[in-house]
Length: 244
Ligand SMILES: [Zn+2]
Image (tube, rainbow, N blue to C red):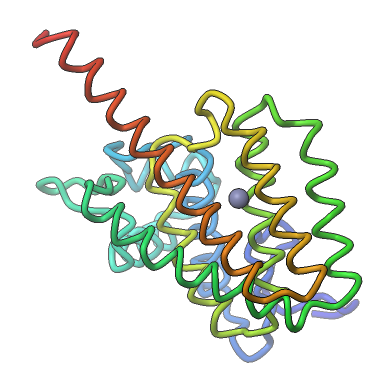
């Protein structure tokens, strides 16, 4: 090792978990495979219900099978994957799980907004405002807007300046990858979502914790309602098509 490079970690490692104390090759490869598979679920390459095959994943990502196997076990422990006989498939959230997830998300995000209104630095607030400005350029691209939405919310989490809250929100957002579609794909939702983001930023900028909490709570509630309406629409179209 040398040149300031962390031990054993390839520059392509998406995890960037360059800890000397944990710097074992197997650990880094496992983190690598884990992050790659998680990212593939997150970006829709693998959707809920899709089967994940160890050998195919190893070939796709150019890593050996052992770290892939370890990554799959870890994802199964985290309920991101589920068993269908001997196969591992990407988990699906049912109606109740969705409600449970949104309940937790609402409370944690609202807390993050409240703390951000108290603790965000001037620069953090400016960055949040800049994000909303920039996101208007991609408002008609649901996938790009979904990624930008994630960045925006993560920025609020960081602005809360509470590391334990950030960790809990990371878990919630990881699980949200199990929703098949982004709610931002719904008609008109992109524009409304950005208007809500603007309201959240203004409340944080003015240091009004109660207003920030309320604005974020309303934002998540509207996103949840949009998702329920989308689910109802998909269900209705399935019924109309009838058995095939
Ligand atoms: Zn949002």
